[in-house]
Length: 319
Image (tube, rainbow, N blue to C red; front, side, top):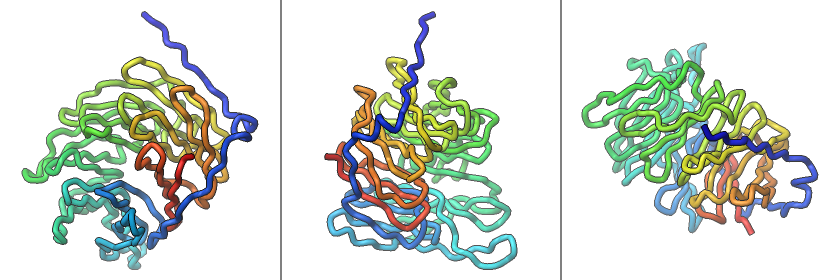
């Protein structure tokens, strides 16, 4: 059996000291801490702790609130804002996952043409952490117990429910075709599945030894970041894999559309390091984020956005 050597690339202070340091070219203010961001037809969508789905026009940078959820009750019975966990959009249809305020269960809603329909609620007793459209009529969601579930919107039923492993779920990401998804969790194992069938396509067990916080997949490349202070990468076609050693927990990561660049939140000052995956070398250091990052998202090869546990979303341009 062919042996693949895992390359460990150390990130020392001296390695990033000479990098071009970039400041954000724009700061976008949401109405609360931002938990999720996605791109949709020339705009940026933001899901916030204030219970809002907000849209940013990327020409004018005007922020519009598309939906503000009613308040829910905390464990003491007091009204609080409904935290939006994740959002998505396809063909003018918006997906909003939030807290039901009842027993830790989730609300899953669809908004289309201004009309809001609840798909799942507290009575369905689902602990959903993240949800994405596979197409306009199907939703892939992940539960806290690390189950991958495909839901048929029109039929109002699950097409499959797959337990990926016994660890707690952390994050998943879809590729550009929405036909593959990579899941990461507390075990440190990365699992790639076929979204139509739920079948496991690949399991990567040697990149992380602790909880994975964030994952992304573009082309045949996967990146992940975790509690073990590793910023990992893997190519599903060639088997090439390795990781860069961070000096802090890696809470967020993302790939550019071509998968040439990988961005990782690697330092305790919330800065982002952008790596060239062709040469495995750091290229840029992005400084200016003020809180722990929740999401990084590339719009193109030179433009990316980052969100954190505060209302400011940063826009960056690589030079």
